[in-house]
Amino acid sequence: MDKYLAIREKIDEAIEKNLKEIAELSDYIADHPEVSGEEYETSKKLVETLRAKGFETEYPFAGLETSFRAIYGPNDHKYKVAVLTEYDALPGIGHACGHNLSGAISLLAGIAASGIQDELDCDIHVVGTPAEETDGAKCGMCNQGIFKNYDMAIMVHLYDQNLVYCRLNGLSCIQYDFYGKASHAGASPWEGRNALNAAMLMIHGLDCIRGCCTPDSRLNSIILKGGYAAGSIPEDAKVETWTRSPNYEYMLKLNERAENCAKGAALMAECEYESKFVAEIYKTMRRNYTGEAAIEDVFNELGLEINGDHEKLFGSSDIGNVSFECPAFHPTLQLAERGTAIHTREFMACVKGEKAHKCLADGAKLISHTIAKIFSDEEKIKKMKEDFEANQQ
Image 1 (cartoon, rainbow, N blue to C red):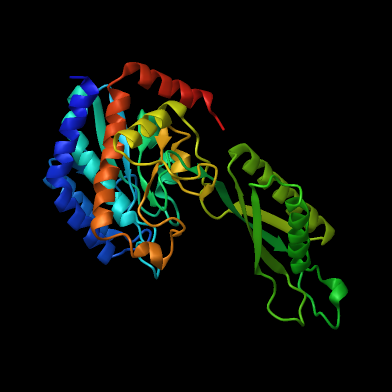
Image 2 (image 1 turned 120 degrees about the horizontal axis):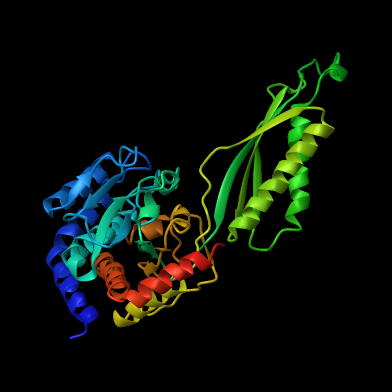
């Protein structure tokens, strides 16, 4: 029998054996949602399950209280794969992004794949990555160099369509603080320097730039602070600007242009200014055609129709940062009817039940079969790494 087919059979037996238990865990997490950075009970449940399956765990991990890394066996194989696990909920609408289920998918995939590490000469780690919806734990892990030690990283996201890959926007959030001079707006306005004017001039500058940007990029701003009373010249003002683009280098260029708007606005209003990032930069998702071809093969083998629009922008996610550290993959599985948006109550209603449990099994197979397909073939491993080096966008 073909090596890959034999490994696949072994994986599927392990998935079937553990499916009921992990489905119950997924439903429990759905019923007990914890928002980003507060996934205390959720992460504890995930770690307890992995420990019961024989994994050694680092918990907390990477300086994050609700993060973990689980390793099965002596960790001495040639290759390393990170199965990324998300499990944070949204305020008010719980698991409307399906992280209870995608986290369970990663857990089940890691458990199933732990039994085929020797055949692949590959250690398969389950890495808990909290706070995807806010601070993006993967960003901090990338800053620590954690994913540079991996040959591949993979996870599955739930969606309203099946996609081999996601087109992710890069996202950066920058705050601009303008400093002027307060004075009485009626008696001596000429003695003041209006920081709010600087903020408004910057906003107008950004409006002008927006008309000359690529259609798939975005520049959005708000004034966070603009004074306290109309009778006083505002001495300080704050603007927050979000730039997005599916091209990382272009996003950085937009940041430069926004900085120039702030600089010019401060000059015109005779104010000073400072800028600072208020969140980690979410990078774009780097393509890897060899890995994507393997994922497409697995979709077809599982009888899952690839029915989505790959050119539609998915949004922004911290897995983009991981794709700059090692080959990384983020396929999606259809959980809800087409047109059902994530981050809605309609999507949240789909994250439990029979269809969700089928997605759990399919997602675990999609991850673990893809790992097996690539790491049972040295030529695929070589080409995947060549793709990673070649595609630096």
